[in-house]
Amino acid sequence: MKSSELVKRRAGPMIARVAVVGTGVIGRSWIQVFAAAGCETRVYDSQPERADWALEWMAEDLKLDCAERQITAKEADARQARVKLCRHLGEAVAKVGYVQESGPENMAIKKALYAELDRAAPADAVLASSTSGLDMTEISDGLPGGGRCIVAHPVNPPHVIPVVEVLPGKRTEPEVVSRTVAFLNSVGKKPVLLNFYVNGFLLNRMQAALVREAINLAESGVADVSAIDTVIRDGLGLRWALMGPFGVANNNADGGVREYFTRFRESYIRHWKELDQTPSMNTELIERLGQATDQMMNGVSRAETRHWRDRMVRKICALKQSDPGHER
Ligand SMILES: NC(=O)c1ccc[n+]([C@@H]2O[C@H](COP(=O)([O-])OP(=O)(O)OC[C@H]3O[C@@H](n4cnc5c(N)ncnc54)[C@H](O)[C@@H]3O)[C@@H](O)[C@H]2O)c1
Image 1 (tube, protein in one colour):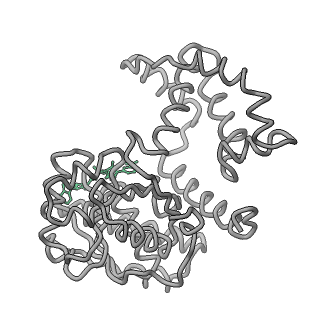
Image 2: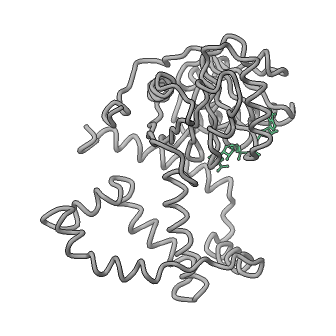
């Protein structure tokens, strides 16, 4: 599949009825993705109070969105009406075309859950996992329906951030890969296809490399956490919302990416040679980072910050859509 095919959008969701299984931090956010896109969204969690809480959270979040005039009250009601709480897995997955599994990140639990899903869901439904790091080849090992199992790893929170990493397992059928990509496009997501499993996928590998260095710089006292966050937030991050490392390189030298990597080859190699230290991550270090972060936040609550983040990310996405540059 060509990358240009990954950005094609359709009018309305390609699959009318979906299930979200597991309604923690990620599952509850997926509910909003599908409901906003117009899917009838079945919701199940093995702990009923977690599913109740997810729907309460959705109602609260929609109320805030209405208050801020991001959506109308009518639209909020329509989204809520599309969500159906189910107390049994079989009821949740009956007649669905797609399941977004968002259970705990534990291989034994995922394997047991996939065995149940494979028995209960219609034979042609896609079984997609939100896993951040597990291999679908192993999760679906031995299942009769291994060919319809796939990873669709979102960025938290999926109802705000578009990218989803799509990874087939060794047995995933190519048609299931295309159907998953097309469906995710149709609900407003931006699927990115990986050719094979690698620990951490794309996103968490790159994030881990950067966070390791951020912690090393803070620990060694080169700068405080506020300065380090500022360099990302008001420096690199502003460019990164528009282009990735290769796009940045292509625009940082008049001769483009080849000139950039040729001119800066030696300095990158010098940096990389000393960027190999893994932080201790002991309790004292985490506490020191915690205190410095609390100081930076200066009493502003996480709930407040998260809602502001969600609102701003949506505005940034809308701005990018209004002037898409080379993605046009
Ligand atoms: N938290 C993140 O930032 C993040 C980001 C991307 C992907 N993910 C992935 O998403 C998945 C969910 O992560 P989370 O942070 O939402 O976890 P979480 O612990 O908040 O939620 C997991 C939910 O699954 C439920 N559950 C447990 N067993 C179940 C079963 N058999 N059937 C149905 N529900 C069951 C739990 O009751 C809980 O509500 C994980 O695979 C994780 O790696 C997490």
